[in-house]
Length: 267
Ligand code: GLP
Image 1 (tube, rainbow, N blue to C red):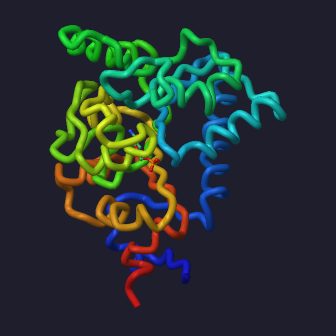
Image 2: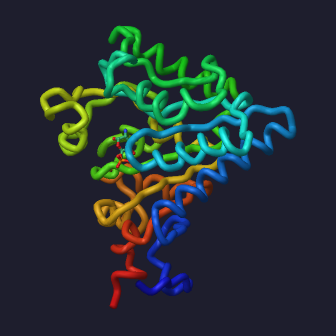
C-alpha cells in the first residue's frame, strides 16, 4: 500500500491521522508518549492525569506500560486515572466489569495508588446516578483536568459509550447502549441477552476537555467507521465525528484501519 502523506492526498481528512505499519508499532508509540508524560510530571513533582479506555484496542499499550514499570522502573505513583465508562448495572468483581479489565490489564501490575483510580461505579442506585456523575466531573476538574485521553472507537462510531445521538457538549451520564454495541459485547457476556442495556460514560464534552486526545483503531474491521470519523460530515449519527471540533485530537491507526481513507482508497 502506498504511504501517501502529501497535502493533496490527505485533503479529505478533518483530523490529524498517524498511520503505523502495524498495531504493535502504534501501541508502543502511544505507550511511550504516556510514559514520557508520566516522567515529565515526576520531574516537576506533579501528577499525570490519564483518561483510560477499555476494549481490545488499548491492551497492547497497557502491556507495554507494565513492561516499562517492571523492566525500566517507570513508576505510577504520581498517576491519577479516570476511566471512560462502565456498564450499568455492573458489580466491580464481575468478570465483564471494566474494573476487572483495568485491574487485570494494568492496575494490578503497577505501583499506582488505588485512591488515584476512578472508574464509573456500576452499583450506584439509579436515583443517585445524576449526582454521582456530577461528582465524577468535579473530581476530574479538581485534579486539574485530563492530560491525555485514550479512546477506541465502536462500530457505531461511539467513543466511550457515547452512542449515536450523543451531544457534543454531553457530560458524564447514564446512557442506553446501541443494539450493535450490545451484539459486539455478546461474546464477553455469553450472549447478547446478558449484556447490560445501559452504561455510565464520560460525555463527549468531558472528553473534549482533555489536553491531548488519542483515538486508536486497528484492523480492517474499523476501516469504514474510521473513514466516517475522519472524513465524514460532523453529525450526532457518528459521535466520533465531533472530534473534528478539537484541536487536541490525533487518530493513531494501523495500516489496515486506514485502508478506506481516500488517500489509499482512491486508485
Ligand atoms: C466498548 C468501549 C469503548 C471501546 C469500544 C471498542 O464499547 N466502551 O470504549 O472503544 O468498545 O472496543 P474494541 O477496542 O474492543 O474494538
